[in-house]
Length: 317
Picture 1 (cartoon, helix red, strand yellow):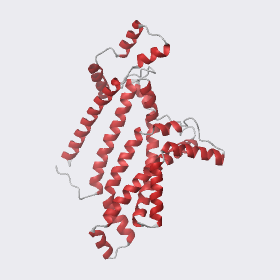
Picture 2 (cartoon, helix red, strand yellow):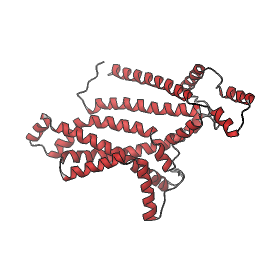
Picture 3 (cartoon, one colour):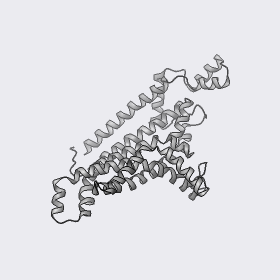
Picture 4 (cartoon, helix red, strand yellow):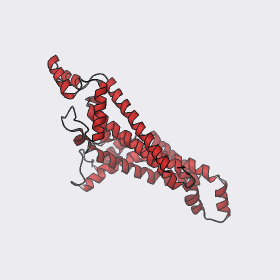
């Protein structure tokens, strides 16, 4: 097991290194930089002032030197300074992480709480009216964009209750009730879409397991249907579901751009788009690396969860 864990950690580090090169290179390939944007906004270009700003920001150095400096900053914990705000990048990024993390966790809780039980029910009641209704429910979730569903929720609250959620971010220390409502609504919208995918994976995986011989043997021994389904079948069908849950969580960390915009939440994904528009390299590079780190970490934790959930999986030392 130790050898496997070491190999997975090594692969994760190599993946992050490769991602850092891609992130750095792709960002530099985009036309223009923060200096171009500043001078285009001002409506004039003074070569001497432009050169002075580029030197101050370090943009006059060779690209490989800028990359090495960025990696050094990551290793030492100094993420550099925002070009646009002239503040340390970590001071800007730090308050964004809890917002996105809270929304992602709440959305995942909604997705799992809906997706897994409904997937089990759909599999057990295969080809019945309830199964068809649940399958339509899941298809609707996959078809409707979460941001559109969020807008529908907001408009429904206005039309039916004459009330609109807070249009600015409310801290839990300021008003816990409004904060909970502000995050519950987008969590329901995003979680519904994710639950649809989890439900379909749970259903298909459980149907495959229920055809195995050991399930028929358990039934023949007189065990109740509930024990057979929840203790034997689901336990062996859960691995693909865990994989999808991990992928969905990693997606939620960086894929909530429009949802955060609709509900006006100051999260990572929304701010990342603004930083890209301003070519704020330190902010963009570090935010995308943060998302890459979350994806690699989640994949590692999913692999570790396999060993706990399925004792048949053995990793040799």
